[in-house]
Amino acid sequence: MTRSVAEFQEKMLLLSKAFLTELPVETKTIETAWLQFQDQKNPEALRNAQRKAHGLESTSKIFGYRELGQAAANLEHALKQVLQENPTWTGDQDQSIHQQIAAHITELNRLTAKPRQDQTLNYTKKLKDVGHVDHETAARVFVVDDDQESAQELAMQLSYYGYEVEVFGKLTKFRSAIQKNPQAIVLMNIEFSDDDHAGLRIMKEIQQKMDEPVQVIFLSSNDDLALRLEAVRAGGIAYLTKPINSTDLIDQLDSFAAPQTQEPFRVLIIDDSDAVLAYHAAILELAGMTVKTVNTADAVMKTLLEFSPDVILIDTYMPECSGTELTKVIRQIDGLLNLPIIYLSLENDFNTQQEALQLAGDDFIVKPAEPKRLISAVTLHIRRARLLRGLMVRDGLTGLFNHTAIKEQLNREIVRSNRLKTPLSFAMIDVDFFKKVNDKHGHAAGDRVLKSLARLLKQRLRGTDIVGRYGGEEFAVILTDTDAPGASRVIDEIRNVFSRLIHMSDNKEFTVTFSCGIADIKHFPDTKSISNAADKALYKAKKKGRNQVMISAD
Image (cartoon, rainbow, N blue to C red; front, side, top):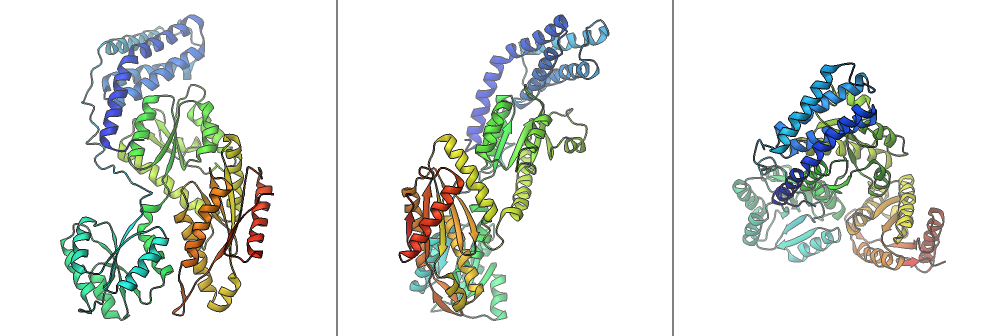
């Protein structure tokens, strides 16, 4: 994976050297295919020559050999014209076309003998605005309050949800820390023992000296308009009154820290040129995306099932089929009708964007793609697709997969694990005495409990694990590459943390627990049996006293 511009630069230099080494062979292959077509009148040889010229054009442009790329483009266009007009052309029908193609091949051979690079292969300038995003880094939170007991309790609650928390009882220490960590989210108490407005004052001073505003949430025992106005003027992005409801606070923090905790974008690139694949993959990896590359159409189906991409980039020309044909095949696969597909094309592949849309694609990008254009297009399509998909498969309250979606995910993961012979566990979780929570504290408080558990599961589990709301107060978790004992340890740790979370209703604190049943595919190899086994194990856990995890072994 490409982690820096310097690594990207080094990779491109190595690929460029390999390209120059293989260039004579590539041009000779094109010439041989053309001669074969003339001798044998075989349209497939003509198609091979056109595809090779097409690939040579894009690769030459990636490495800065514009003149060579233009010669390949001229040849590719002439060959394409012959294919479109008469693929069985013999050479006697139009001597001018024969001479034109021969001239293009001669020019290509001349440039191949001593290729001239139009510019130094330096991507630093192009990539200076492409920053790597670490999607797995925990958001840092600074709690600033001279009431150390209250501050430490708040910090502990936040840590349960995966936040990295640091507590400051002295404003001088906080001032120094925020200068070094300006991206931290600040929870600033307004009232200090020696100054009722100390939190407001210090934040106003800090904001004036920062290049970018610090994200600060103000905490106060008072709730009046004048204080709220001063908080806004000090750069406050939120204002919460004490006693702090941790669920409300986490909602606020999650909304501001979302870019740091979202799942990395998954991109599948399909192209028969290894150089083109490496170039586009490296750009997207530099932007923090997870990329898989495929250079043959035969490998597409397996990768689609295992990788589950958010978007596909497809070359318009592949040896086995065209990009548009492959797109139509993908569109016919269950669940992939709305998967965004972007064509990687040269300037003359499509006359208009409308033509690309008519051929089952969502967009097209001229290759070699400019880094900003590539990242922008991929990001736009993935965000839109995730939003639409979320509306269809996500539970409205918790944001987790809904019942239907989690069952589909379980079926897909079981098929994958059985094929790869890797372990997989399925956990069923049920909130203990949830009806009593609703009856005693109200349905709004019950909803907050469910949201807290959903958030805790998402933050404590790995990105490869899959969480869903099975229905009511029941949740389901698919733990990939994990056997039942391993899953039990993970879920039991979450159970322990959840039991210590403090919930609030009408300024009264209460705690809640959950029970869990686990089964794995070693003993239950299909969707129905593993679901039933986990459900039975959950029933045993509740029957034995609740607030515990049970594994089903039979």
